[in-house]
Each structure stands twice: as structure tokens, then as C-alpha cells.
Amino acid sequence: MNNLEHKNIEKIEQKRKLTKAVVLAGGLGTRFLPGTLVVAKELFPIMGKPVMLYLFNDLIKAGIKDVLIVGNKLKEESITSFLNPPEEYLRKVESDGKLGNLKEYNDIMSHFDSVSYVNQEIGSELFKLQLGNDSEARGSSVAILAAKEWANGEPFMVLNGDDFCYYMDGRSASSEVANIYSQTGDYVIYGKEVDRSQIYKYSSMVIGKALQSGQGFKMDDIIEKPAVGTEPSNIMGFARYVFTADVFDEILNSRPRPNGEFCITDVVSEVAKKGRVSTCIFDGKYFDCGSYLGFQMAGNYLLAENEADRKALLEEMKNLFSLYNDKSDPVKE
Image (tube, rainbow, N blue to C red):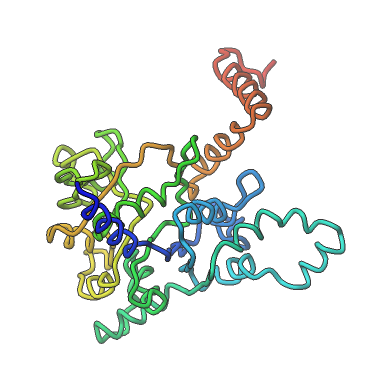
């Protein structure tokens, strides 16, 4: 590659630079009831910091400047209070001399030009106008459609508010996805290897040719919950996407599944068949913080980053394993 070609590629990639991200936070978190009656699950703390702040920190590494949280009207008060803390509360924190506890929060939030919130019901209203009926539209596509006005014709990343992608070396999952978009201009869907015997629970990608950069692949199709033995690969799609503004028309022209839901995987599948979807494979640790186990394990990994805490954690784990490996019944003794 000569210098002129290299400069042209740099210009194209700079033009494709992502600055917007949508965080999906519409789920009610019923597995965490009764806690989620008051606090959105995306705000549950891990090591004293809400899950959402870890996502925000990852987005900062990817150069994101504007964030939209798409929530549910039943969670609006919880999330908006987090984004815009009540003045009375802040005055009390200040009078108690505890403002320093908000330093990391303030530092993270100051990196963004805007962090705003909308309810996913907006997407449902747009579907009603498109379909000419009053039925309530449901599904991941509906939540993404709620970002149509906010996106303002620009490309944007999408991530789930309770998905925690962790690299021990500090790499950013969001940066990996953004880099694939800057190279290709395609829709991008993150991929993750899973045990082939378990892929029927998720989605399975049809992997195409390697990208010229060697950092990802074309994705020719994606099959949602394939029948056992029919899966094209053991790579599932998850966690993060990048879409260009035409995705909203693709969503509005999509069809619901038999259960009535409009799912973004179906939209991605149709666009992939046109040769316009790429992927890269996540090789870090993934935790579903919408589940008890995922939430707890994410905390353990973060705790282990500190050497002293790691020693204490490992020692306690030894005690735990010893307790459950002991054939005697400690309750009876």
C-alpha cells in the first residue's frame, strides 16, 4: 500500500468515526425483584459503582460523546435521578463532606457532551403509525426505533445495559466494535464463541470472509436459536452493535415473529444477506448482569484486580469449596 492509499483509508475511517451510543435499559429486571421496584437493574452497584458507569467508561475509550438511554416508563424516575441527581440530595452530600465520593461519577459524566433518556414506548408509537393500528409493538427493534429522532441521521452503537464485557488488560469492547465500523462502514455485530452444544439457546452466525485488516469477518447471516445440529457456527451475536441511520427504515419494514415481537436479529439477518454486516470476535470475559450469577461473578473479577482483595477472595473461595466438598453435614455438627 502506498502513502496515498494509506492516507485515503485514514480519511475514510475518520469520516466513519462513531460518536453516538444507545444503551438499552427497558427490561424490568423481574429476576431481581423486589430490589428493582425502586432501582433499575442497570444501576445495581458492583464494587460500589453502578453497572451503567462501567459501560459508560468503556464507551469513553471508544470515543463516544453522546449517549441515549432507552428505558421503560416504569423505570424512568430511577434512571433520570441517576443522570440528574436531585439538588437537595447533592446539598446534603456536600454538607456531610462526602462530595469526594462522587468524583469518579462526575469525571465519567464530564467526558460526554450529552447523556439523555427516552422511553421505549416512543418506538412502539412509530410502529403504530407505520402499521396503521393501535396494537402495542414489542421487541428489541422497538427499543432501538425509539432513538430515531435522537440519531439525527448519524451512525450509532447499541449495547445492552446489563451486559458486562471485561478485558483484564483494560481493552475496550466498544472500541473493537467501533474499529470494525470505521474500516467497513457496515452494520457491526459483536460475536462470541460458545460451546456448540449450547448455541441453540442463542443465535448462530454464518461467518464469511476475513476483513482485509485481519481484525474481523464478514457475516453472511445469523440464525436465531437454531435447531440442534443445524447451527452454522458456534459464534453467537451479542452485547454490541453498530448501525447506520437506514436501520430505522429496515426496522419499520421488518415483520414480527410469531410471538408478535420485532427483533433486531431479524433485521441484521436481512441486511447481512445484502453483504453489509461485519463482525469481530470478543475473547474476554462476559457477564450477564441481569442474572444473579453473572452479577456476582462480575463483582468477583473486579474484586480480584486488587492484590490484597484477590488474596482474601481466593482464601474465602477455598473455604467455600472445602465446605461443600466435605461429606459431613456442617449443619448437624
